[in-house]
Length: 213
Image 1 (cartoon, helix red, strand yellow):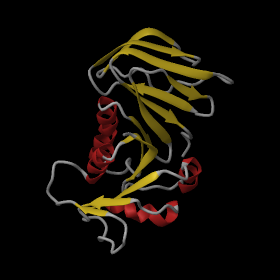
Image 2 (spheres, helix red, strand yellow):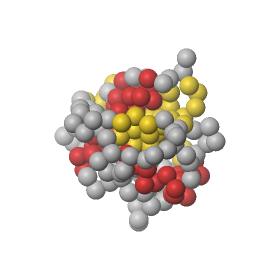
Image 3 (cartoon, one colour):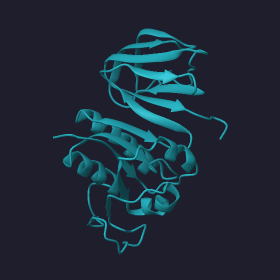
Image 4 (cartoon, helix red, strand yellow):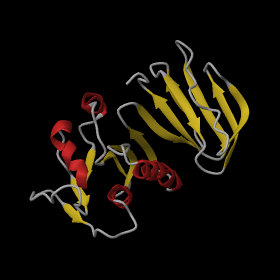
């Protein structure tokens, strides 16, 4: 039976705006801290429901919370393992933080988690200090005018039948390929709520909160 709570995955990438994250947490969120993500535990103010990792970035904590120790040499990153474990435990809604940082390879790998979640019919979102990332596939996605910009990026195959409404640069039945990313830095019209949908394929929607940071 699906767990109706949201699963929060905390990775080890830098986080500066803890206040924003804490403002969107719910009391019943289930927190999985991944190895170096434990560095954020005190600032986030939320205890771990589960700890996973190979502990090459953070010393294995001596705590009573459930801990899964992973081998150093493995196919899954600690974060990807945590997502798979969350799915195994019945969660349908995932929020991933501490996933975008200086290591571009890790950041890009973590973005691919959104594709994995979508393939498994799960909801996923990645939040960093500047933006929120989610996939647009078979459902309409909405962007409030509180965001400064939003971008649509194709990260797999070819996306067809793209519609954008309520934005400075609207689109009807458009097409975006991986080798021509023209959907960057759009803006929601003042007082409007933009709508984005795609008939075929999947797009990465990046909603930018503050481009000046």
